[in-house]
Length: 324
Image 1 (tube, rainbow, N blue to C red):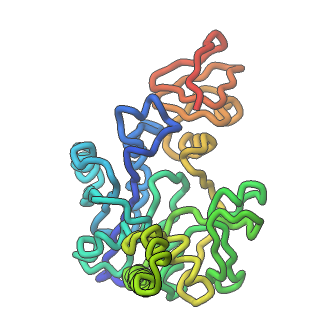
Image 2: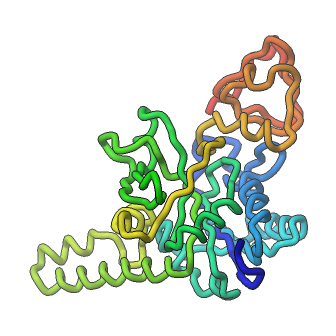
């Protein structure tokens, strides 16, 4: 177990208003992270999971939405869970790692020993305390949550290879064209503050390469100007891939449920874990449906590829549906 003096913070990436097209038109007037799922805002579920992390002192939401869109939610959730939640608005895209680095001074304000990073659009059992314990045992810079999927679906995600004994991350590639592994990145991480040094290193290398190109030729200059900004750093391609196999990153494999929220199949998880029930044989009848709160489904009803709004009763006479 960790020392009682240790402090932990969590950062949840919530994206921006260009996201959420799969939820339209319902998401046109509400930020995707605040879209209600199983009776709570989407981002409420990872925030609640973070509450279980020992010695948690702060949760940050990082995104491109206007602060006023999150003000009421942040105040409400902070009072409900009795843990400070703060929304941080990015001024421009910095990438998944660059966004973390951009707010490093605030994130390190409480001098945390560990930093969790979660993507808002994933749904799982969030074994965060277990990840933290494993991370301490590994002794690396970071640990990422992974899961085994079918070989056919693996290419949609970041595929990785880990040492079966030590769990060290040996190889990582984002959405490969050829099959690499049936283990994928779940988008949930825990880091030591050393992650900021690694991100800064990527930015510095990019600046150095750009400076070399500028003095070589006009053609090289044009190429440099088209490359990624020096402060735009991706966690997968720029951090995990080059540092794999260097005893910096490790994996924690979950045997439980995991889905991206854009995949409707995540609904079964909410039903079984958030006291949200429908009448009868729930899983068999609702398949890949995304549901609101207080929905009743009568016998013999099958609903697929639909969004069911709150406080609805579905029976065999219902014909209308909202297709994803």
